[in-house]
Image (tube, rainbow, N blue to C red; front, side, top):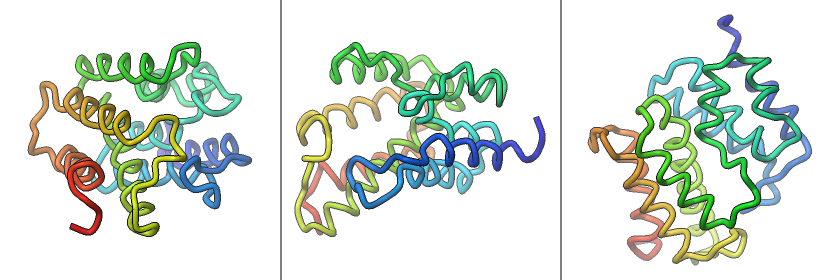
Length: 188
């Protein structure tokens, strides 16, 4: 793959998400999230395929494009990384999808987990920022409330740290974000 794979992935994601907005902040275009995820990984030195997968991680899940489209355009490695980060079976309940993803992450390598870790960091830091702006915790934009969100994020963190160094800066950042949103009152 060429050196421009990251830019190609960004452009593909911009087009794929062009008409979408964020759930938690409808004023914000959906592409803001994949850009944030990719920037987190870029800052921590991830390789170009991982950064590319970060831009693409919501494409197969939330747009008309499929994993096959990603594979055809970006190759097997990036398609695999996107697949690991995706929840494609919409026939299952929220709880079933989240539980399956939690279980699935335990067996993955750190490289395979990176997009998921950065995705969770971006989401939890967005929650923290929005809640601080509002002055209270508001989970109304999410499919499940605070208790279910906390269950998911804490269990996902435990799954992501399985067989990993808990001192990894990305995992520390995720743990801190989870504690900030769920472990204490805002502003403490």
